[in-house]
Image (cartoon, rainbow, N blue to C red):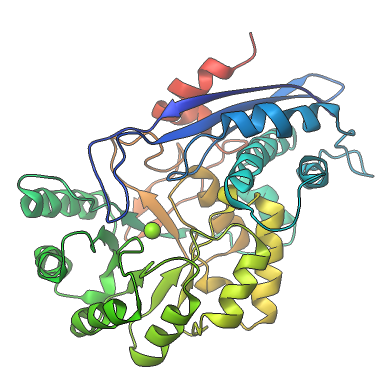
Length: 384
Ligand SMILES: [Mg+2]
């Protein structure tokens, strides 16, 4: 089963919102299509980058697509199409470390290969992943993510947005904080908490690495502690493990981090040096930003050996690929970009949310074809 063609284009993710670190006016993502000749027909798998790291057109065109096209047959010994075999091909000639953008270039191609593998197997990706030795099959715990900064009338717009998510069936939400100081953070939290019955454990805040040092992080942790939040996400620079260790030792609030780590070795360093607590903290490594599913399976094995259960795994971003992995691997929960105006937003067609859990779709593959906004982009990469 050979790869016969790869098509990629950069797609704008621009929208008028921001978090504490970036705004999204220039944001892009890579959309890819990979054709596989199965010997009987040609199956096309699709991938769409995770959010936040820009398109990887140059890396894909110059290095990773040519390697795949020149690489070996991806049928395993049993004749089944096996995307894991593509990792060695794509990563040949790449020095250890400095994973960065290349991990996303490999990751989006890996996503397309898994979409194709599930279609060839005529099953939804979550089932294929579960059959590889995963776990969960029941409804997926989900939470609605959003709560970005809105400009004028921010608090009213924030409350309206969160009401909309609760109306959709979500029971837990995450909002952005950290951009405009602690008084503003408190105002944002207190605008949302009444909508959640005053329960801080239904509200997470993502401060997008706003704290520049441990002193700032300590002040923030002290200010947030009375709310009993579900978690504080990305308090400081992703590699400031000493800051994380200080927070974990000093305050009970769970910490979520890992969306800006791109390999199993970086994740191992986090677990070695970040002082995180396996009974409450959350690891948010985002598979398509970190080389894809095979690397993520390595992360799960490594973290499991360090005492971390899959319930503490909460992949970043809210894309459809993560949904299938959360379902098939039995992870702790799925982040849903619940704003219906966002291109990667929502769930696969055939999945519905009820009381904070999402049902599983039956469509073969990842389900891009049934997602209106994504298919408007990916459909243009279909074979002609
Ligand atoms: Mg985040």
